[in-house]
Image (cartoon, rainbow, N blue to C red; front, side):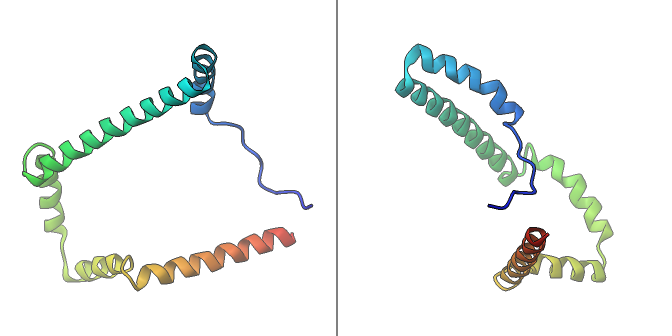
Length: 122
């Protein structure tokens, strides 16, 4: 079998910090309880993040709070508008549509496969 040219990385700093604590919880409570604690912590993080996202959405949609920070940026961008720049930005945003994005993804996939094949040949 051919050796991989990509160096193997070890666990990241988060895993190195959390793994010993999870191991202690597992030894104290057992595997099932440790799994439930892990799921509970993950669920709590998800709920807090969802609440934060909802509050930001609420502030933006009601034009208060965070939306007040957007006003100076919007005013500055409106001053920079030109017909040529407007057209360039429109073309750029249209690339993410139902026609442009599949073409970009297909080209990127072909390029990635070609590079991988070239690296494997060596």
